[in-house]
Length: 336
Image (cartoon, rainbow, N blue to C red; front, side, top):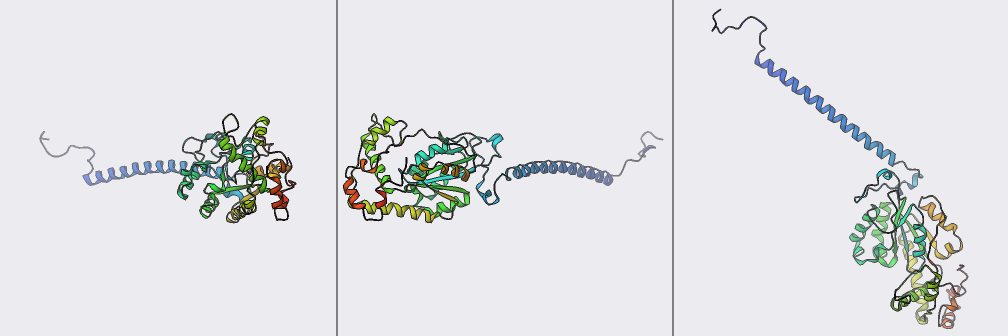
């Protein structure tokens, strides 16, 4: 054969170009299919893990009707780690000043699984409008709120203390809706003897200016000596407005209970807790935490009979005797 002949030499014929392009296309399709299958499998595995985690976290030991009040928050400021699937109950203590709420909150915070973070709405900017209130509550219930009451990542009940005059009643419809949607349990704490509360309010207002304890104002004390100093002050009650003040305070409480009647709640009275500490066991059961003995370092300030707490007691007694509030005078509803 001539060395420059264009005829091909003997051997296997080279496949035509269309067939070659087809084979390359088939191979490319195969590679894409394998890669896509691997990605899909990985995604399925990841989704399966997420589903398993959800199923694991969404099946806490709680009655079916209480599942909406069991939460698994994911804080933005830290990781709950191994406690991420530990359920958390949200709560709020609703009360009025000088109703024993400070003492009650220290009792709750003595439990290793409960964190109550105080009166966070005593600052105006946090309760300026419903938007600021919701923003504050969202941050709190996401466990992104740090106070001395914070325990650890495994906290089982997390909440705050909220006074009626700190925006709670001003936006009652929106707040009630939020509490229901968020699955927040409400603990109402009031005093039965409104007269005693009024005396305590006046005494506390006096000390805010007088600063009887070494130039400092204290609403709560931790020693008998400090309590005795504060208890020496005896206010003079405005007798002409005494009954209207008591009536208004009790109406305020009734209105509150009516507005928030549809929430999951329990109602406590300071005097009942003083008489019977089993009330605290019911609170712990309500919050879904193990029942323990709760303790507080706070010392009660006003322990004397009512006639010894007011300078114009005779006037007060004459005003209330024969009225619907006469039962406040004997102090029989309070036992230390």
